[in-house]
Picture 1: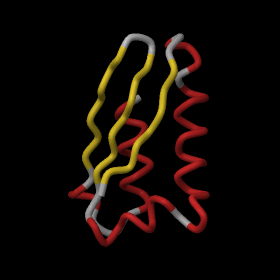
Picture 2 (picture 1 turned 135 degrees about the vertical axis):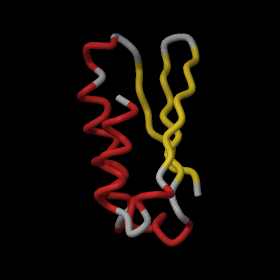
Picture 3 (picture 1 turned 180 degrees about the vertical axis):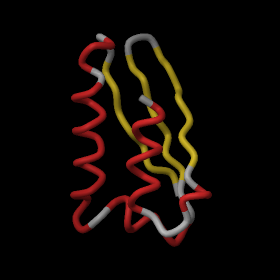
Picture 4 (picture 1 turned 135 degrees about the horizontal axis):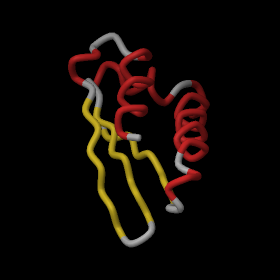
Amino acid sequence: MEELVSIIAKALVDHPEDVAVRTVEKDRLVVYELTVHPDDVGKVIGKQGRIAKSLRTVVTSAAVKMDKRVTVDIIS
């Protein structure tokens, strides 16, 4: 799943070498912390958060088999 977040983020940004994904697990919650170059934060979030929402939807849908709640946090 971490790989999925990384691949999608690298396709969106101008500095793919600065994309990093960290996984934090708590009980039944998995948080993927996405870190990107400061210039690319707007590209990952999108207008009114549409791209970020879409990214979270894709990851949540892919995580159905894990039987855990999954979320993506964007850290600048």
